[in-house]
Amino acid sequence: MTDLIKAHLDHRRVWRDFDYCYPVISRRSRGVSLGVNLNPDKVCNFDCVYCEVDRQTPPKRRDLDLDLLEKELGLLLDLATSGEIYEFPPFGSARPEQRRLNDIAFSGDGEPTTAREFPEVVARVARLKKQRGLDLVKLVLITDSSRLQAPEVVKGLEILMANQGEVWAKLDAGTESYYREICRSQVPFQRILDNLLTTARRWPILIQTLFLSWKGRGPSADEVEAYCGRLEALQTQGGRLQALQLYTVARPTPEPEARPLSRAEMDALAAQVGARLPGLPVEVYYGPEDWA
Image (cartoon, rainbow, N blue to C red; front, side):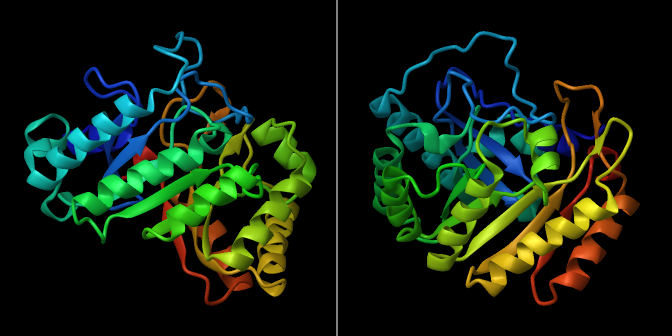
């Protein structure tokens, strides 16, 4: 396994002695992404069969110290913009085209929008970005789509979207039953769909979907058909979809039966979705055995 693949695989929300912020070389960002973990307690309202978060190890801390978070992110921003970060492993293995700061992502050990401090954190991060003149660096919310209509979340989204923001929203299923089986959440599936539509009517959103082999089988033809129907409904009802990211399992999972699909299987799914939704950009991310 090459150093670059190891760097892509290493998405632990831990860097040196930091408590909240961490850098990664991101395939989907095509560069360096600085993560902001608003869930150091590892609490999440989803329990996805493919989640790579280690929930067996006790969390380092359970609170959010916003002053410390801001200090950590400021230090990482300085390292990334100066290029010093590439002196630390595994970032020294980054290709020349990856040696760029692409985004600051709200993505941690749980659902970031469940943090009551979410809007204040977004405001602080936007201020840090502005102070350093990083207008082209995106703010990305990676979300399970469960709380997109909560008033405090909408407040945070307004700040995010005014500062080169993007919403990367999860939709892993087309049917309630498959959603329950894979995401194992008590949040109603219809709420996910309603949240996606309401948000996409106001701002363009990017849909993220993980397809996997679960108990020896990929998603059924009926499930994929239903999934395509959900995306079509979002568009026909006025939702703006920026792009679709299809990916599969890339790191160890808590369930041994949650396995990656092959490159051929992912390409076939992408072709099926693309045929149903012409004009929607579809990006495909394969499992580690298919990485170049």
